[in-house]
Amino acid sequence: MDAVECAAKWFQTSQKVAVITGAGISTESGIPDFRSGEGLYNEETEQGIPMEDVLSWSFFSEHPREFYRLFNEKLLFPDARPNTGHFFLKRLEDAGHDVTIITQNIDGLHQKAGSTRVLELHGNAGKIITEYGSEKSLDEAVRDEKEMRVDGEWARPAITLYGEALDRKVLQESVQAISEADILLVMGTSLNVYPAAGLIFEYNGNRSVLVNREGTPLSDGFACVFSRPIGEWVEEVQQYLDADQHTSDRNE
Ligand code: CNA
Image (cartoon, rainbow, N blue to C red):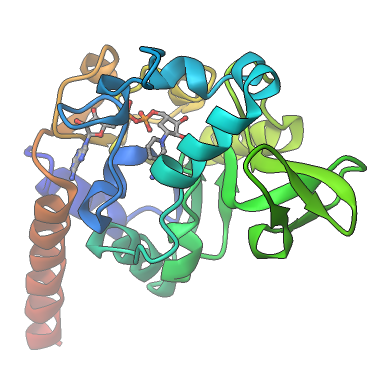
């Protein structure tokens, strides 16, 4: 079965859908990913420091000015809007599936599309955390070139930097959703970043679908693989589902 037909068929007979998404689901919204040809990892700072190192706790604490300059320039996309990939997942939810989205993205676009159960493994670039642990919107922060404050308290972006642990509760909820899922859908991730990539091994079923333009180190383990843009996959799956609905309407 091809990766359109298998997914469309499985959606029709699956209640619990776990979805793991990565930066590739947001490229069609104009947000660059990390590892594609035009990805951020091919860029470096003026001092020749790769972006991967910039997004680390040690760089943040030692060079806050440069960190914030690059954070503002490369990671904030306040005007980005969800695309067909994000809206497709919301439609699955509207159609009555229990959808849990486990995202590595920090752009908040799943929530903007209306999805209600979104677990953010790496946090959210539109939020900040104060030194006493309360979470606020980035808009509330007073920012200068080298630090953020809110009501006088030191604050930082609510994203997980390399060298930091993931939120344990979010990780536990992700493991639970994936292990209980009828179908696992993985979209737009190079499956290179751990522990996020390792979550696919929590899935216990045989209905696993990978939608990613390029191959990944873990592609062989999926039951169905679609190696073209997410927008094209969504369009084809939707056509399949609509045609099927049309046929069953006619037979009633
Ligand atoms: P990645 O390593 O950059 O991989 C993205 C994958 O998506 C690549 O394999 C691409 O081939 C694929 N891809 C890109 N566009 C499409 C498309 N339209 N259709 C199908 N496939 C596509 O990104 P990962 O998410 O795997 O890596 C994890 C990092 C990236 C996380 O820490 C994120 O926080 C981080 N990141 C997030 C964003 C965002 O929030 N939008 C942007 C850039 C990086």
